[in-house]
Length: 158
Image (cartoon, rainbow, N blue to C red; front, side):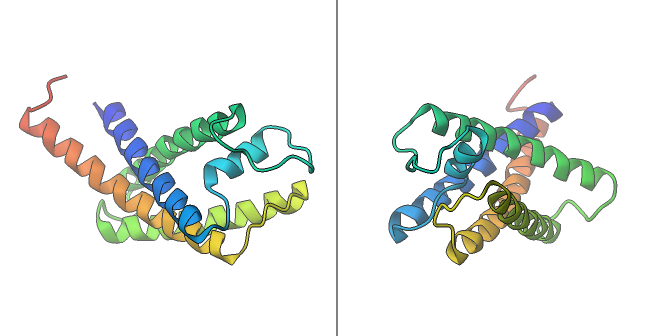
């Protein structure tokens, strides 16, 4: 049952994170989503190639990696809570999300410098990435708690 909770929490949190990023990029008409960034970094990209459009093979890979990482990080959050790092509450989720967001900003900056890729990423992208990770962690804890309560009531039988 724990595996189901982690998967559902990771998927729902990642869905919200991806949708908010896509909305921001669409409305502001600037920047790049995390799934597009993963597409660039995981599949060899030549400098003359343009941003992936539609649902290209590269973008599929970016989506898959993004969602797998979402489930993985919900598992990491759960392990941290089980090890006594913070309580299983909203405040700790905010702190985990902020730490996760700062770490991802640092990782993206280092990776882009290493690969010498310029994708038009600016401060707006990093700010959005930071808040997206906070929303990710909040969504993850809310979903995990809801799924736990539903299973406890017996509405979903194993």
